[in-house]
Image (cartoon, rainbow, N blue to C red; front, side, top):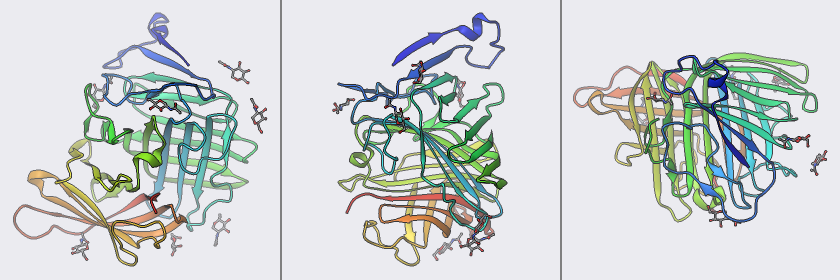
Length: 375
Ligand SMILES: *[C@@H]1O[C@H](CO)[C@@H](O)[C@H](O)[C@H]1NC(C)=O
Ligand SMILES: *[C@@H]1O[C@H](CO)[C@@H](O)[C@H](O)[C@H]1NC(C)=O
Ligand SMILES: *[C@@H]1O[C@H](CO)[C@@H](O)[C@H](O)[C@H]1NC(C)=O
Ligand SMILES: *[C@@H]1O[C@H](CO)[C@@H](O)[C@H](O)[C@H]1NC(C)=O
Ligand SMILES: *[C@@H]1O[C@H](CO)[C@@H](O)[C@H](O)[C@H]1NC(C)=O
Ligand SMILES: *[C@@H]1O[C@H](CO)[C@@H](O)[C@H](O)[C@H]1NC(C)=O
Ligand SMILES: *[C@@H]1O[C@H](CO)[C@@H](O)[C@H](O)[C@H]1NC(C)=O
């Protein structure tokens, strides 16, 4: 991989005040597995929140860019993932002769998974341009790309894949600032969500518009958008035994949760809540947030052979405001296999203040995931 520090935009006079940064870095990703050692970055720099974090991709390494939108009034959802993964390093990536591929999963308003789900488009090579807290990426030849607008902070994912029969756009206008798992998007932050697995979250929540044509069927909706990046120098399953993750909105709050067990059973969390653009918690403190399964099949720790739970109870301690207490019910589990579930959920939440009764119940939507990789 060549890593070019380029001031090209500045030289062309196109770098209007971005507030922070007039430089962009261009990364050419070769699509091949490198021999030898990868350098995985786990401490943040002042820039490059959404730049590639593993240089180069060796046979045990992975780096991926994840985007999703969940509808605010139906079971519709869309998930787009851009992979740069050596074979076998990240679960469920379709076999490919390139480390670079892109996948699309879509659920329709009735909760039915699209038949094109989980197919991947290989790309021989890719380009990522990192700028400030965002990046643009093009998986050449696959028809999958995304762009970042450093002035507005908006992201746009574009798909034009004749082979998959998919064409269209997904727009993300951020609400709330970009972040790392344990703190804000500044230099010197820990980016390990668990040991040996990195996470950055350019879009914890976004007002999103989906406009896709899938095999002739239109899928258009507005909803809660989200984007993150995940990476590691060793396979994902060597760092993560199980995880509960989700994002969504409840009342005026944007939320992101993680509650993870390593393969040896050590628990890690990351919790984010913002109200408009004000962050109320962005923490990986185990004392401040917890996710546990509820309802049917609510075994904890989760077991790969057990049925998936029907919901989750999530608490996040916002400090002086009190505790955000949420019950998330699984509404439409459109992917459910022993090692994995992805579902649209409903959130019922309320604020439990430090003293006095719980506040009114607020409603909302979530897109959630459960990995159960350990037996
Ligand atoms: C890839 O590089 C990492 C160092 O970041 C190293 O731990 C790992 O063993 C390497 N993988 C292979 C297959 O050589
Ligand atoms: C990779 O696989 C695709 C699809 O099977 C094929 O068209 C392409 O030529 C292959 N590329 C290489 C470098 O082998
Ligand atoms: C969402 O999916 C669930 C489960 O399949 C179904 O009961 C419900 O009616 C769906 N909602 C809409 C708006 O179609
Ligand atoms: C759900 O909607 C999709 C898209 O309109 C349609 O193809 C599918 O047949 C529907 N599924 C059910 C069970 O109605
Ligand atoms: C990317 O792959 C295409 C198709 O194999 C090739 O024509 C092009 O030169 C490659 N670009 C780079 C920068 O390697
Ligand atoms: C990244 O976002 C943080 C939090 O909003 C902000 O303080 C910082 O200036 C941004 N950095 C860049 C390079 O734009
Ligand atoms: C969540 O469920 C628990 C257990 O049933 C209940 O005690 C709590 O009040 C519920 N919270 C909300 C906000 O619905």
